[in-house]
Each structure stands twice: as C-alpha cells, then as structure tokens.
Amino acid sequence: MKKATKVLALLLSMAMLTSVLTACGGDAAAETTDATETTEAADTGAETADTTAAADTETEAPAADEAAEAPAAVTAQEGVLTFGTNAEFPPFEFVAANGVIDQYDGIDMAIAKQIAEENGMTAAIENMEFDSLLIALQNGQIDAVIAGMTVTDERKEAVDFSTPYYTATQVMIVKEDSDIAKASDMADKKICVVQGYTGETCVSDMGYDYEAFKKGTEAVLELVNGKCDVVVIDSATAQKYVSDNEGLKIVEDPEAFDSEEYAIAVQKGNTELLDMINSTIEAKLADSTISELSAQYLDADSE
Ligand code: GLN
Image (cartoon, rainbow, N blue to C red):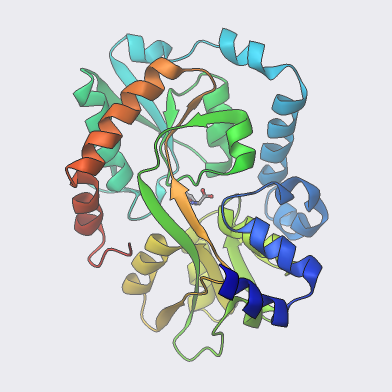
C-alpha cells in the first residue's frame, strides 16, 4: 500500500487521497456525508438515500433492543431458510430456466442451497431490489441476505456478516478502444454505476459525476450503445458482462480500488443462524467447494 500511496499522492490532492483510500476498501462511511454527490442517482430513483436514511435511524436510535425483539429466523424454524437476493448479479445470482433454487441460479444460490440442506432445511429465495435487502432483513421478511454483498462498516452497523466467502474488487468496463487506463482517467468521462452497489460509493467518493442505473445490464447496455464511457462494477460480474458483449474490456486499478469481501448478512444478534451459516461456509471454503463453484459459473475465475 505504501507504493500505491506514493503514486496516488503525486496524482491527487491530500483531501482526494484520503477520500479514495477510505472509499473503496469496504469503508462506506463517506456515503452518508456525500449525499449531495448522489443527486444524479436520485433522478433515477431515490432508494440509495432511503437505505442510507434507514441505516442512520437504526444506528442513532436504540436499535439494539429492536433487533433483539425482532422475529429472527422465524421461517427457519419451520424448516425453510429464506434468503433475500437481487438476481441481477451474474455469476452470483441470476434468473435461469432451471436454477439451483427454483428459477434462481449462480454461485450464491448454490451456496444458499448447501447452507440450508446441511442444516436440515430447504432454501427459499426472495428476489428484490438490492437497496431493499437490508431493510427486508431488519424487518424479518427474510432470514439472511446472500447477494454478492460487500462487507462495509456502514452495513455492519445495521446487520451482522458471516465469514467472507469471496474476494472481489471494483473494476472499470470500457470499450476496447477506450483511452481509460486508470481510475483518474474517468475524471472527464461519462461514468455509469449501479445504484446502491459499492461501485457507486467509490465513484461518488472520488468526487466524479455519474449516472446510476437499477441494473448492471442497463449500465452495460448504455456503454455498448456509446452513451457512457465506463461502467464501474464488481470484478467477477464485469468479467461476465465482457464475455457476453462484443467489444468491451476490463481495466483494473488496484491503487484506486481496494479488495472487497462478500459475506452473508443476518439480523444483528442472530448468532444461532450466523453460526450455522459460518460452519457451512468454512467447510465449503476448506474443501474448495466454493472455488469450484466460482470456476464453474465463471469460465475464468477472477480470483
Ligand atoms: N458487491 C457490491 C455491493 O455489495 C454489489 C453487490 C450486488 O450487486 N449484488 O454493493
């Protein structure tokens, strides 16, 4: 990181440097202070703001009591473990004719099924917008969230996370002939992100204007159609989009984008479910099931 810091220091002011380094490594604390920069996102739907507001309320109010009282894992006791996801994030979750859980397929869906089955239960999926997942979890509508969700400090204030099961990073998807070679080259470009994803936080914290879309496919279509110059999104998902669309490539900038860890979220204090999830995840990491699943769903694993 020292080398990265030196290089960045030459390129950026100290204020900018601090912002970048705290923005993209899973520390999303700046999300709440940068509300003005998400104005564009608000044009396409104000759910980012809703999520942030909900998280704030949760932390400012005496939320611990409420979480303890909430009906944690009620359905799990009936033998059905209900996971919330946003099935718009290949290769982790997507809709398919014959998915591993109903019409839902992907690395996360396979992991969810194994967690349920190893604990004598059946997995069910509730598909919803990414921004709604943590609220649905806090309300007890779902037992857990499995959605390629990056562990961030802000999210940790609202929910508890399992042992991480996958390491990713933000990358830039550009046209093959693009001159974008590093994150700072985005400064004068039209940037597309997906609303509520950590990619949005990164770009917002870098101080760049951007347009936020509801789905990764919509942002990528904008790029394919030449209406935007770059899409900032998670690495494995980017790889999937690049292999599915002609004329695109991935540009990485590890000095600007730190690694992120995906984990499963449960209601705060639901240690019983968390222990169950962790024992399966730890076993599936140890016996390479999860890396095999990653390879299976993504021709060339990005890890
Ligand atoms: N990892 C990103 C995040 O947590 C995107 C996840 C997703 O879209 N499913 O924000």
